[in-house]
Amino acid sequence: MLGVKVNVIGMGYIGLPTALMFAANCVEVIGTDYDEKLIAQLMLGKVTFEEEGLTELFEKAVSQGIKFSTSYHPADIYIVAVPTPYDKTSKKIDARYVLSALKSIMEICPKGAIIVIESTVSPGTINKFICPLIEKNGLVIGEDVQLVHAPERIIPGNMIYELENNSRTIGSDNNEIGMIVKELYKVFCKGEIVLTDIRTAEMTKVIENTFRDINIAFANELTKICGSDDMDVYEIIRIANMHPRVNILQPGPGVGGHCISVDPWFLVGDYPDLTNLILAARKINDSMPQHVLKRIRDIMKNNCIRDISRVGLYGLTYKEDVDDIRESPTLQLLEKMDEHLAFGIKVFDPMIKKVVVENQEIDFGKFLSEIDILVIMVSHSHIKDNMHDLKDKLILDTKNVCHFEGVYKL
Image 1 (tube, rainbow, N blue to C red):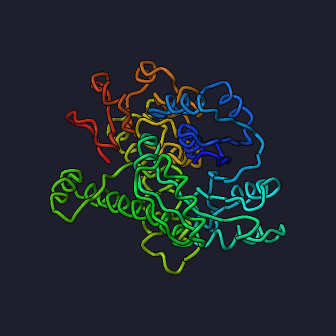
Image 2 (tube, helix red, strand yellow; image 1 turned 135 degrees about the vertical axis):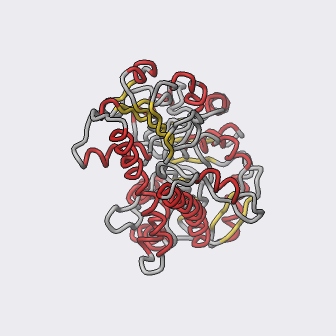
Image 3 (cartoon, one colour; image 1 turned 90 degrees about the horizontal axis):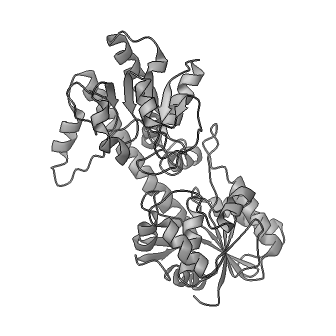
C-alpha cells in the first residue's frame, strides 16, 4: 500500500519481522523500541536474533528505506507488538506494555489513525483496558482513533515463511476499517485473511495456543503413566496416531515460549470457575521440569553419582534451532533447583553465544568433558549431528532423539 505510513511498536521476535516484511513490500515503515541498544544495533544494519531468512529480509527492507527509532512517530497505522505477560498470582493478563504503547501513540498520532494490536491479549482486553484508556485521554474511538486486533500467528524458527503463508485474523468492529487493515496485510500475506469482530479475534488466538497446550499435556501425562508401569510411550503414541482421527503430540520436558506457556493462563485468570481442563493442562505441563529433575535424581542414585556438577543440561532455548529462551523448560528447571538450594549443574546450548545462566559452557567439547550424565532438553540439529560424541555418557533424552541402547527416557 503505497502512500501509507506505518509505525511498528516493539522490535522483538514479532515486531521486527513484521516491520521488515511490510518495508520489503514497499510500505513506508518506522520500527520503534525503547531499547536503545537494540535500535542502535538495527541502525548499524545488524539483526538482533537468529532466524532463517531474517538477514536477507532485513537487507531488502533497508534497501526500501525502513527506519528505526526509540521515538514514536506520526503515522497512518500503528502496529503494537509488545509483550503481554500474565500476573503469576491472579493469572490475568498484565497489559501494562500494551497500555504504555497506547499512551505514547495517543500523544502524537494524527486524527483518524488506526491502532492495530498484534500482541496476544485475553478476550475482552481491548474493551476492558484499551478503550477506557483512550476515552480517558479525551479521544473518541471511531473518530479520533480506530482500533483493530490482528494477532500474530508465527513461530520462531519458521517466521518468514509463516508470515507470508499463514492465514490471519483481522478483528474490527468497523468493517470499513477492517478492510483497510486487511488490504495492508495483503501486501505480503498469501494466506486467507479472515475479517471478524475484535472480541472473536482475541478469543480465537488464545484458544489456538490453549488447544496445543492441552494436547501436549495429554502426551506428558501419558509419559508419566507409561513410565510408572514400564511402557514405551513413544511406541504407544506412534501406533495410536495411525488411527485417522488421532493426533497425539510428542511429550517433552515442559512447555516454553511466549505463547503456549502464557496464553492459557489468560483464560484461567478470567474464567476461574470454567477452566478446569485448561488449568489441569497448565499444571501438568508446568510439572514437567520437576519430573525431569526426579528422573535425573533416579539416574544419579542408580549409578552412584552424587555430584550434581557432573550433570549437564543440553539446551537453553524453548524449542529446537532458535535462540529464544523465553519461558524455556530449562530455565524453569534451573529455577526449581535454585528453590531447593541445588547448584552447580552444567548447561550448554549451541544457539546461545553468550553466558546467560550460571555454569553455562560455551564450548561443547569442554561441556562434555566435565559431565557424566547428559540431559537432552532441546533437540537442536547440533545434537543430532554430534550423537557420536555422546556414546560414553549416561543420557536422559527428554526429546526422543537419541536411540542408543540404554538411554533413559522421560
